Image (cartoon, rainbow, N blue to C red):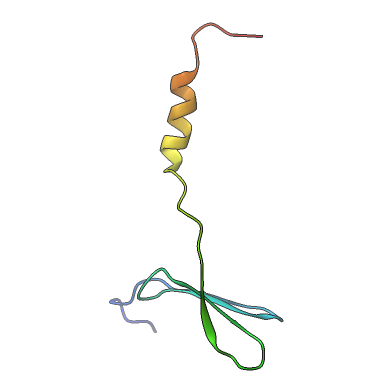
Length: 67
């Protein structure tokens, strides 16, 4: 059982290594190779909110269809 005061965490293990996110922060950590050392990975900037991604093109649309 996990205590309710912990945030989420994600860990995926594969044949070449393990990647982990959380639980105390949003750093992305990667562990590869025989030494088993965790290394922090650079992340891409966050995308715009999905609602904003939908609204902006909708606001540019015209009421007259174009061909």
